[in-house]
Length: 351
Image (tube, rainbow, N blue to C red; front, side, top):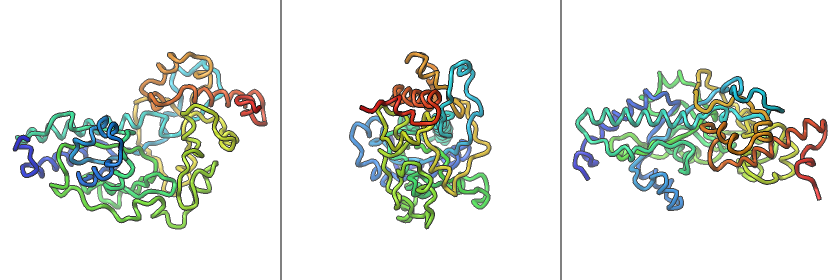
């Protein structure tokens, strides 16, 4: 290894350059993860996943959050003229907040590398500064390890002011807790922030257990329309509406009974959380979809056109199923045509 990039030369300068870049990146909160804690969190992943996201080469990481707001108030212009009914989108999917977070992390990495080079130090190759959002790495555990918040009973990270003092726009008391209304991402590093004192020991164990700091609150459990959240915070993915909205197949009957005009996502446990708040100034132009899309996009257009319309949005990811979206559109249209009653019988006939 180049001696100018060894762990005993320039670590504090690299750390300070990175902290300054992160503080200017427009992130909601951020914190450092030491190499030891990072590899402990990623050690159980399949080798292919670690290789895909560069986990084995990383020597440390930054965990970051970006709070979202209501999103665009109207669907995109191309949705005009398509037949309804309208299919609802969860708030985090109304624009590409994950893409926005990744872009801000990319900008922070670029600024940090330039500042490090200006100090006469080697920042390491650009590929060693991996910026990730909605990746296959354990972003929630790493956000907890970085001290960004605690794990709510609903399985979402309840973000506090977050980050070291340099990351905050003012005194900690001036930054109200973010709650669960944010997306998470990572910036992998070619140096260990612990070498410069930038990564502390893990937070108290109650931060790492679902509901450890929720106290007696059961709001998310009571709000979940399908009982996907157990009494002590145990999460049943197969019972979660959001889990099914982007997947093929017939959901369980209990889910169909409360499906309504839903396209992707579910905000029930999010909205019920007493710590939930929207970021009033949150904005992004990436992947703007708005609060709903017309069913006609999925029922009256072919795959190529649908994928073209959704490219660059939160619904344009390769693992998402167009057939799953078409199923939701069929449910909504059948409900509209049938009026009161069980529209699922018309989409999935019982034998």
